[in-house]
Image (tube, rainbow, N blue to C red; front, side, top):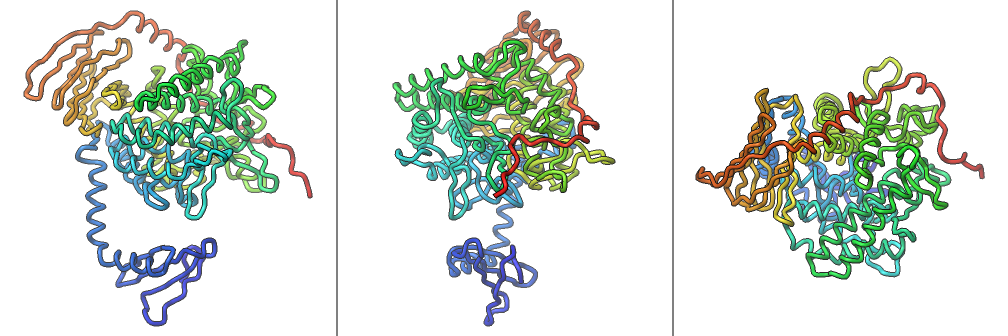
Length: 616
């Protein structure tokens, strides 16, 4: 019998027992039980432990299966229910929720597998990009808490180490790797996101020493005179290196634009946590650094002649203006009109109807296909042309933020249909080709067949930016900013928030719109935000309802108690300044278009961004 390339030696005494030691990890032992039509595979460092686990599974498999069935039903029903007027949307989001759950696991502590089949391990950046969509919008706060607490245990807390304060890039049985710069900011931002959904200040207090170490370690070893976070070529998410000399296929040292945006978020989250824990001196110092990075970003990264934003600055302070989707993460650091123009340019250059490519197709380094044996190594195309579905999340979010709901929805709907009709049921892949191959209608799926952050970002954007439910329970607030596309005229959902559940009914019609919310089990300030109107807030008790009707450019609010008693009624007319701003954005984006493949461009031979490999 063979399992994962390892020879399993049959036990001569028991016909249902097989044991192996793996070549890569000789301490691991695999035990296989075969009884009737069932195979049970167990892995442990000791044979006895693996045998005990296999026996336990055989004895309890039916109970475990029933428990899992009920738990999975709970993810798509009950207090996590979602029902829209579009059956395809319902099916896709339910499948994506269930399939994503397969990657939330316990290996070396609690975590989220980066992807299958090649990444059954935890990656720092993937883990915390995936955390909101995989656990928070689905209401699995206890699981999210365990993931954060578990990962914190692997942080480098040796003050003498150059990696002091970093969380690992990779956590797998038997090894840790710290060679990434973005995993650590995303860990801190993940803690902030967890606080916003759960309101759990206790975990913030518990992990505040880890947060403080993450910032102080960066300040000690990884910042320049301007306060920017510095890094090596392969320490951003675009980390593919060439075998032989380990030079980066997409060199971005030493100050990438997305890294600076993450660094500012890390510092701002640190300020929030420092205020909560009474560390006033750290809060002030970190705020000053964040302000300095933000104020310097436009000066150092933006070309004043055309408003274009550099992908990165090199060690000699030279700006590289190659257009990459990393820019989308940095839009918060730009003035509004500059951000809008750069978003439109990015969308029309990088965003195909099936996803976001990793470099401007007009760049000499662009590879139209990820896999092209005989033409180039797949890693040369990995971040130089290949489409990554996880990037669709930030692209759709930004478009919705700037009022471009329908283009964003077309991409979200395309991903929904991909999850239902191609690859794994309910799964989005790691990568895709940028262009269909000659004669093909659709780009080929590449990379892992199931990638955590691809799935998780699809869920996050739907709940946070289409339904528009964005909690901040650390401060007792919930933003309600629905942005329904024309394809959805009715949505009902139930979302766990804090210790309670928010029930929402959203209805669009030719006559106007109707929004009704009921918050059970919690007290919070609900802030309703609709384009053209100033945000309007009201404090609700557990069981209260907020009802908003929109017609004739007037919002009519009604706050009711649990018993139906009207507590307050008020109206809000559209704001003329906000309407003018909407009109300006509509004119700026116009009929914004997806990027389209350039067939002639596909015929040229890409050039790598790194020099040829030297022969030894």
